[in-house]
Image 1 (cartoon, rainbow, N blue to C red):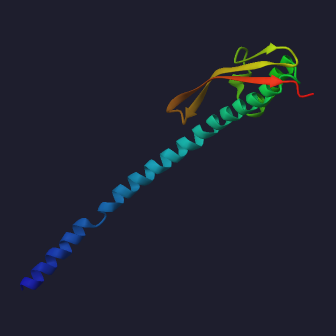
Image 2 (cartoon, rainbow, N blue to C red; image 1 turned 90 degrees about the vertical axis):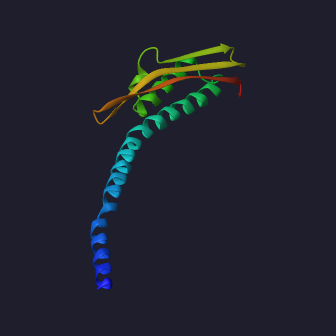
Image 3 (cartoon, rainbow, N blue to C red; image 1 turned 180 degrees about the vertical axis):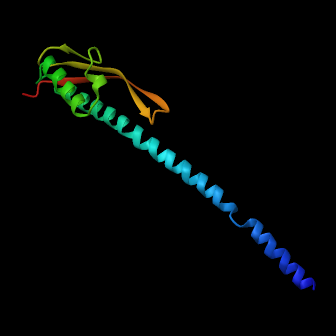
Length: 140
């Protein structure tokens, strides 16, 4: 008889435990989906901003070969290619070349704010405030 009671107690205890782990699994899965969706929205913005800075560094190093207007035009073209309309706006990019055609410094300032829409719930501002200063020498 004791044996039967213990067996019934274990069975009823297991029935009470049935499904306890499902709620935690569902919540974890939901959080993983939300985090993945946020990453999919935010990472491309940071990547394109980083690509624009890399292009600015490359163009700054070649300032002896390119006039200031050509550097600005190439930067605007790259910003348009990367789909950064905020960078194309007036005053978002400034190029200053200090020195002559043989040597000097090229300063490129990128200052703009991109707004990332997170599914209509929140708008995340991503600020770009970077100054690239590159010395150059005539490579001709």
